[in-house]
Amino acid sequence: MSYIRSSVILSFGNFKEAALYFDRVLPINLGRMRGDSEVGDVMVGYPEEVPSVALSHLIDGVEGNRKNHSHATRIFEVVDEHWTDFSKSISPYATLSGSSEHCDPEKEYQKFLNAYFTDAALPNELPIRSIVTKYANGIGFKDYSVAIPFSGNGEVSAPAITLSNLNLIDASQADWEQIIEIRKDVQSSKQLTRLKLFIHENFNNKPLTYIEDDLSRSIDNYEQACKKFGFKTLTSSLSMLLDAKSLQSAVGTGLVAGLFGGPIVGSLTAASIELGKVAINIAEKRHEMKSWQDGHELAYLFKTNENFK
Image (cartoon, rainbow, N blue to C red; front, side, top):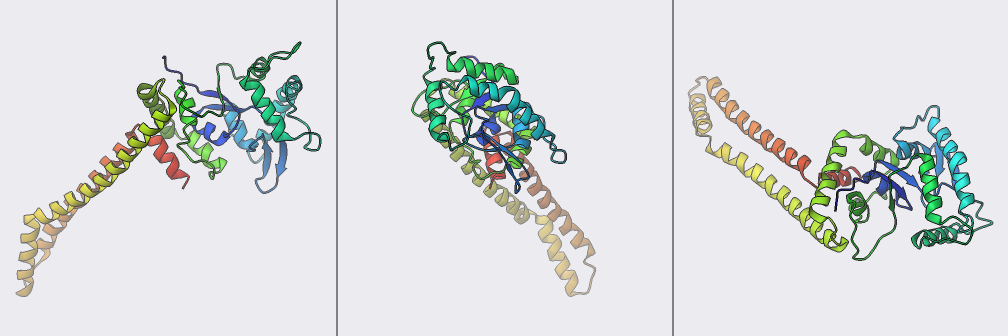
């Protein structure tokens, strides 16, 4: 199957993880909104809340300005211009707007999910997926994928969709500022592209269970290689030190000269040169290790998880 980049997605949940794999993310439900003095922002969305400064970046890549709250204004406009009409259009299928006093938000959201999964179409009403498409297109999401809860042994083709279903990155404890920084980082972007290509080339149309097992093997191989590489770096440096005959002779000469009150400057210079070679060797090995890690197909996963620790 042809490569599907899937840089734009409509998300039913797990917004943080979706934000790590897709350029643009639109939460399906923007019907909940409240101010949070601790965060210093307006929190939007259900079943998860996203600060408007982050939601602005998810929708079209524009970073919010916390000084003038321009991001909050933009999100208000999106809700007013698009969400209001959307919530009215889907009211025959589920009630996503209104206070908790008049509806059970969890129950109504599940009704909405069930209707979308079955592509419900009530008499004299637009099919629910057509309503969602109209809503997405109105905000500027044209060629998009849809992230839905997925389990079992089914096959998925889009690399980013595959990754978002594997739970390889635990972003639950990460804050949105961390996630936005990763989205803005050029090297992370390149590593994510490399990861998507790796998934497509090696696991296209493979069952998720197979992908999980094979990626677990790759991760284990990576960790073992890191340990082995680190050990070799140490032993090679020690070998250089032990095999430095000129260093040993220089130190020996210095000791003899010292016993007889002679100069030892020359011998110390020789020792410094050899020790410098050891330091250079260690630095080269570390650089080689860093280059290998940064260029690894799974580097995006390793680096992102490390950032969230």
